[in-house]
Image (cartoon, rainbow, N blue to C red; front, side, top):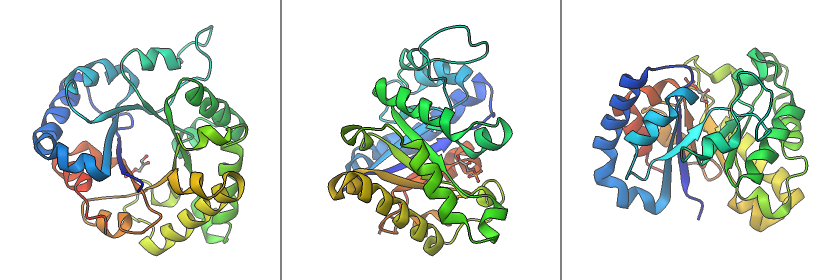
Length: 257
Ligand code: 13P
């Protein structure tokens, strides 16, 4: 059985004091349930890089995993403004969101660059969360599946059979991010099924059944149950609602069937 992954992407929000307070409130809600939750789900938060040390400290002793929102693919070097995988590892970061649509569209990250980052994450035994998703235009013109499967294929280039199961894929339709317009569970399930189908074709049944495919885009405490109870929706990547402890904790406790 795949464990659900509920991940909070804090994006460019919070200061150290607020980040610590948010972790404390999330822990107050979730620590008492940790043993039960651990049976079938994992929880992760991805703060901005500069808050990672503070959040790592605040998370000490909890089962909540620490993620980053991006990283460079080289281990070190003359790359002003970038953060290398070993720097994240030094603070206990285990997961890294890669190819988020905001990285693709605002910062012009290409499939090729994202693929290099995926391979670097795997090399460092981190869990890359590879984001894919179509824009409103692509959605309206019926190209969603083409776009998503192309991003998937290019993101997975060179990912070996034995490594693909370490990854998670996040389907985040761009038109649903921060808009309050979520994909319907049926819409999301159709795309997730197709993503799993593509992984199956290339990596075989067992591996395809292991890879987690999570949904992102206006997930909140009211719509999460209907999304994550779909068989191919293995969790959620949550933006706005992950910044409020009570709503994030409620999302973590989602009914999954
Ligand atoms: P929202 O939940 O705010 O729509 O953001 C989704 C997202 O981009 C998570 O990575």
